[in-house]
Image (cartoon, rainbow, N blue to C red; front, side, top):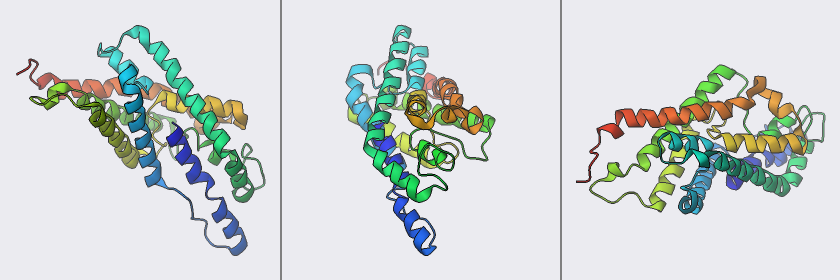
Length: 265
């Protein structure tokens, strides 16, 4: 989360220099110390390190959609789902606070140089861009219904891919994938989802990743804007991934896993 929110902040707030140059010269505002490629790679790297760090302790449950899916697959006790939810939310909230502390000067500098009619990152004309560094909002053309489908599909692909990565039967007669291979594969999967499905809403595909920063933004100064924006978008990245994750894993089980040899050779 620190890497992901950090790269979002850097990409958005580093446009301040370009804004100032544009005001002085009339040149187009294009420059940024980041972009879609760096965002996708950094989120993937963050997932890689998260899986490496937490894999031996929790099985790398960084995402409530993963926890619900694994509980439905009977690979996690249901009694652990709510504690995991709380830990996932708390981790995302704390990461948001850390990056707010780290990037506050850059955020205010961005507001002064790039926002119309305000020097505050929390007011109209600026808050949509600044809040987007922490949490997700749909594109203006994206309805809530299509956004729900976007998150459902993205999380289904994520959990379908994870189900395949951790399926020991896929590697027979070789040993199951090791921790590094699993972490790298999941990180690459997140990069691929971001590069192919990130345009509509920023591919949160993780209720904790979206709701933890959203609550932080609400407390930090953006207020109820973060819950009202996008036609009350806030609930979509919570509900859709919790449905999409099991759907993706069920699809993998139905079309691949059930057809693999069940007994060790």
